[in-house]
Image 1 (cartoon, helix red, strand yellow):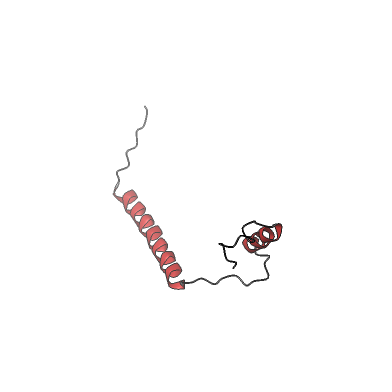
Image 2 (cartoon, rainbow, N blue to C red):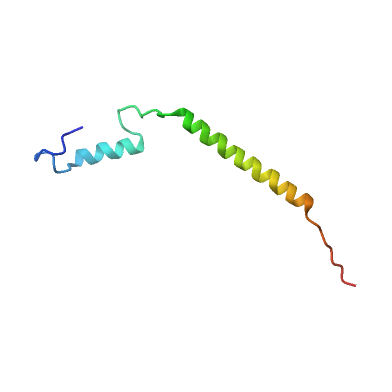
Length: 74
């Protein structure tokens, strides 16, 4: 990185913009940064999965316990 306090580097050049955009789109020569904490990602996926399962079981139990009333017109 460059020193942000220097006067000569205070302007953004088109090359700077191209470099930053290529990093965003994945067209950069640099390797992408790996996930810093894979345990956090795995934990988030696990918690999300448990929430979905709890929702589905709660929905099923709610349908079993609710009364179904049918009204027939004569």
